[in-house]
Amino acid sequence: MTSARPYETLAAGNFAGGFQLTLAQAKPLTFYPPSGPAPTAERAGFRFGDKGTHSSRTLMLSELEAVLAAEPDTAGRDTYATAIVEDNCLGKATTSTRRISNQRLGELYGLDRRVPLFRVMRRLWSVDAAARPLLALMVALARDPLFMASAGPILSLPMGTELQRMPLRDALRKLVGERMNEATVDKVVRNVSSSWTQSGHLTGRTFKFRQRVSAQPTAVALALWVASAAGFQGEELLTSGWIAALDCTASSARGLAIEAKRIGLIDLRTAGDVVEFGLEQLDPGLGRR
Image (cartoon, rainbow, N blue to C red; front, side, top):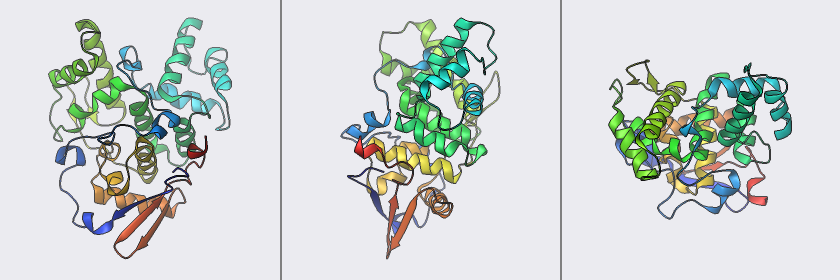
């Protein structure tokens, strides 16, 4: 993952029995260690504060899929901007709408190979199309504080339970304080609800219900990488909020990580009762920038 901490170690026996509940239902949701984000988080492309793209847009999954389909994975930020604004790969009616879409997609995902979060997601994008909603979810959570604030009320819902707006409003209000008026908070609630529907965590239109997503090895590989960039180490890698966002248990995530190794995404070594994850295969550049 980084030159300073290329392997993350955990005791395999700790998770041998697995859990019946998802991580978000079994323990408090934590996207950062108690000491706060590591310096690698900002270098990776995380964004912080009390503002975010979900004040005006959603996950924009279909738009992201369209722009990444329009250009090769070697494309730079200017090339993506040209595809959106001039070539109208998103099929928007006006130039102003295209420019806003370009801006918002850049906020959420970077669309820039100089941003490690985008670079790693872009590499994994073509590995498994079924994983794309969860890959987008990982990056959007890291780059939109409003969206991250909504994660707890969503992920902790028991499967099949109807989403209630008040817990979402409370979580957002805790982040933004009085900076947003009630109408804006309501809009953010609608937008984040739509985004969690796009990722597969919610189903329904007027009334939304929690459903379990099915994680793929590519999504777990990205979650481990992001968790390490955020500052987690050791067994915390398999119990962080990044893994919880995939509706995994620690044991199921470990199994998917083994599959990620099999297809060449990460390294995984075992020695007795210890398992080591090598994450630099996904992107060796973060620790050297």
